[in-house]
Every structure is written in C-alpha cells, then in structure tokens.
Image (tube, rainbow, N blue to C red; front, side, top):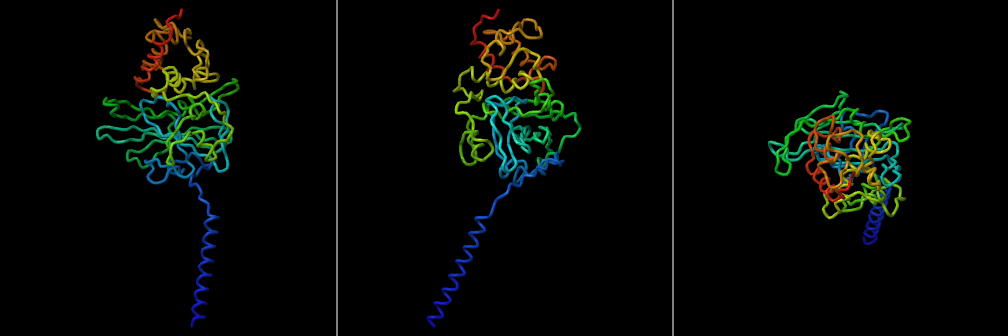
Length: 366
C-alpha cells in the first residue's frame, strides 16, 4: 500500500512538473502584438476606428500597445482647442535625429495622430471631440488625412469633400463664454502649414511639432514622469544618438522660465513653420525659428515686407502697439491676420505675452 502511494505521489509530481515546464515555455515564447492596422496600400480608411490606435471606447483615446502619447513644449494655437497627440511606428523601425530644430526623420509607415477637442462645452459643460488628424508616411512621403467626429462621439469619419467644414462650438474658457465656427481644414489648408521647399526643388509635406527642441521635456506617462526623448529611445522609437545639449523650447505658459524664452517658444511653434527657409512665407525676410539668434532677422527692428501705417517694424522694441507682429496677431481679417489659417479668434493670452516681451526690448528701432 505504501509503495502504491509513493508511486501515485511520484506520478502526479512528475505530471505537475511537465505541465509547469510546458506552461513556462508557452509564457517565454508568447509575444504581445500591437493591434494597430496601417496598410499603406489601403489607407486612408473610411473610419478612424479601423486603424485600432485606441482600445476601449474610441472617445477615451486610450492608446493601444505601441501607440505612444507625446506633447511638444508649447502648442500651436487653434482657437483654444485642446489636443492629444500620439505616435506609432512599425515594428523594428525608429526615427533618427536631424538637428535640434528639424523634425525627426521618421521611418516609412509612421503615423502621427492629433485629436482636437474642447472642454466645458455648453450647455452641459461636456467634452466634445471635433476632429482627429493623421499624418501617415508612405514610401513617397507624408500624407495628411482628417477624420471628423460624430455627435455621439462614437466614431470619426474621413473628410472627403476637399473643402473642410465648419462646426459651431460654444464653451466656457476660464469663466468666459466663447463662440466660434470651428474650421476643420481642407486638404489644401493642411498642406499650407505642413510643407517645405528648402532647395526650391519641389514642395514636400512634413510634420511640425516633433522636433528634439520641442520634445526635450517631461511627460507624465502611465508609468510615470519621464523626459520624452529618453522615453522614445526606451521604447525603440528613436536612435540613441541625441546630443547631450539641445537648445530646447519651453512651455510659454511656464512662468518659472524667462519671458524671452517663453515668447520665442510661442513664436517658434506658431510662426516658424511658415517663416523659415522653404516655408510658406519664405519670401518674407523674418525667420522665426527658435534657433535663430540674429535679432534683426528674427524681426526686431526689421522693416516688414508689406507697409502698414504706424507699424514700421515687425517687432518694434519697446512699442508693441506699433509692431507688425502684434497688429497681425490681433487681427481677424483674413488678408492681415497671422497665423493666416487655423484660427478664427484672437489668442488673447498669446498676444499679451508677446507684448510683455516687446516691452522689455530697447526702444531704439530707427
């Protein structure tokens, strides 16, 4: 009887060991695969949900595996819309460094995702997602696609009219009720900002925000707060060859930073993509990129290309109300305003910080 008991115990022990070993082998060989679906021959899809960028309810914008959130130090003003940004790259590919103030070189198949939404939308103080824009890098370059959200916030569909559309929004912005007809841009309008022709050999479409100078900041990921460039390297989305010292922009709202850094960071993200070599406003003399250390070409005491009464300089030191930049930032006239597209109302806080900075400059423009 004892021998029989010992045999049974040995048998079940051996069986348990075999099951454990097989289970361990399965675990070791098990690989979690990202559900993201980007077939470069089939995109753009009719619906945003077809890409599988998000898990759960689409409106919650919970990124799926390998969809990484990011945020530039300062954000382009778009009629007070909030934005959520994500990046996805195909397996075993990564971006490369191409200078502090140049967009990273992304591999083919990469997707940049940007969702525009409003909080405190009236009358019930709800959140409303308006649009999600995609930049997809195909074999011959970047392509821009826009998806418009339905009223139920369950799906976003591809905008195919080619004209864009207007969506009325009423919301509470820091205690002030604001109303606009939010413009979902047309394909042509998207490309106006997202283009460059540096050698005058032909325009190409490029992203604006994901530059090392804009990503050298901390972001609160699900796993904790971390420098974004380090995070991109960690997850395999960026080659580990970023210089130790990067001339970086700052959050223009961060009052712990100098007024000059905040103002120039605001100008860079809002203006530099057009006012740079090969940009849409290449023909004007001012260059608003953050790395530009030449005050004159940055606009200080620089005569504007187009004469405006009482605005003798782009940036008139000590005289913001006699500066072309302020005049255009405060205008809603399509023939005068800057930025030329992407807004329907004046960014009051942005105007104020640029005025404050101009007031600190020597009043010696002649």
